[in-house]
Image 1 (tube, rainbow, N blue to C red):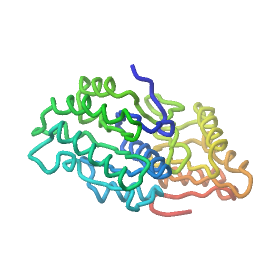
Image 2 (tube, rainbow, N blue to C red; image 1 turned 60 degrees about the horizontal axis):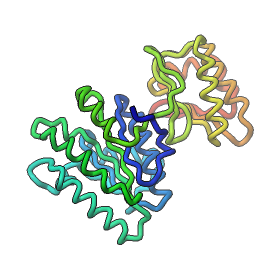
Image 3 (cartoon, helix red, strand yellow; image 1 turned 60 degrees about the vertical axis):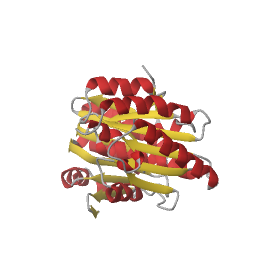
Length: 285
């Protein structure tokens, strides 16, 4: 089984597989991947199937990415050149042309993300997916093409997912600090910080404290994403406030959360912590 590689440790020439169930986590990983390509002067193309082009571009730009000419967002059917359906040979040829164009444009390489949901459509031939993932490997030999193929676990059967993991030299996923049936705490890449989902109480406060400590060490401002947190108790809230209160000027902790979570943090004393900013879904406190 291929070991999981953090997205920020992928190198030019890597061919990675991302399997996901959380769309927000997927977007975070894609944003980090795209940002790394932009910083290296690569051309970046994001092929999308499940999400529309404008929606995916907007999601990436909201995460602070540059929307200039080096970033292209396109529907997956562009991969097969407007033909009647997916064809592995056509897709590999198109990527080879895009790589050559990146060279002519003076880019340091080509970086792509590919939403593979097209392969789960009724009109798609599953064999084309298997051929594509096998044949595209030759384009990575020179180290100028880097790619993430995205597989939504809700769209593919276990056999296909296992095959996808096997044929990719790398797999990427968020760094997970804690995961059980009621709580998941993981690294957020863009903006950098920590993402928490589920229900959080004092019994898991130490895990949260450790995750926040790493964010304090790695990041200037700490972004704490609680958008998918359904419950937090006073003990866990105290960990958040204590971490924010210990940040030296001018560093800040930015917490994104729903109103019920914001109310708990407010009762716990959020107003008394100058370094803490709370963004309540579509508003700010």
